[in-house]
Image 1: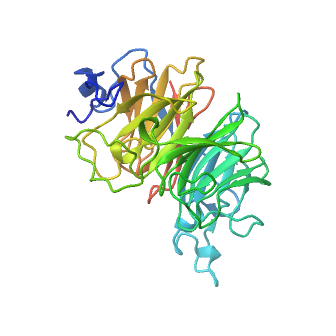
Image 2: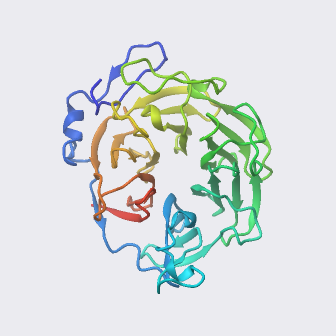
Length: 374
């Protein structure tokens, strides 16, 4: 299979239909754009502004945008080395720096509005912060995929704990209805006030709860079937797609037309569902990608039809641009590196109402970047 061809099949036994054809090669050559109408982006190397309070951030594992167009990140202070947080050592070993609180809110100019969270708070704080989502009521949701975590936490905008789903350090497999297993990401449906969780690093499913009470609603695995936690052969681009998700099920997004998008990262695909869990289709991206896979996170352009979707690829370290009508790859940007506009382990992205993209990087990337739509 061509490394850059995205394709789908409406049923798992159906014929594979090429969506990009020869255009896919153009889409993947040096950031060139195929369609003149395709959005283009330019990195803003001055965003965000310098952090206050001698702060430094660690791995940026989640990015979200709220109703004010403020940008929220969750990062991992525990990923910082003693040398990076020298002033926080006892005794201090250098003049800088101190770890910033794990949840930070920025305004559009890149100023810090507020920051909160961490293990010294009165709530059970996750030991491996993962995704972040700000819902239509400006509640802030955080997932934790680390060992002895397995929880999703809902906070008010100023950091008051409102709801905990799952139990710290407890998991029961992909058919358990109250315990989670390495949750990674969150999406809340304003129409029903249900929360969708990609679950995740231990389990292999999407699970849905009431966003106020935490009452269990439903769950499903790949193709809308019951999830399967059995052994899987390593990903092979020359074999039929796996009938179950691989670890991790890395993100979940809800579109305006009530479709649920779920990233199966290591299988280089995302699957699309009705809100009921009924399977619609799947799309593969950069199918020859090995290691950690190509589909890490998903978001959409802000127009009413959400014409374009953006896929964060943390192995190839680029953002793929697809049409949502046909899922054609029509552009891309980024490459591996540490200069502005490049990525190292591109983990998450979010889009504001102007169409600008904000990205977060993990491993030793440890930054948030802003890409301005041109």
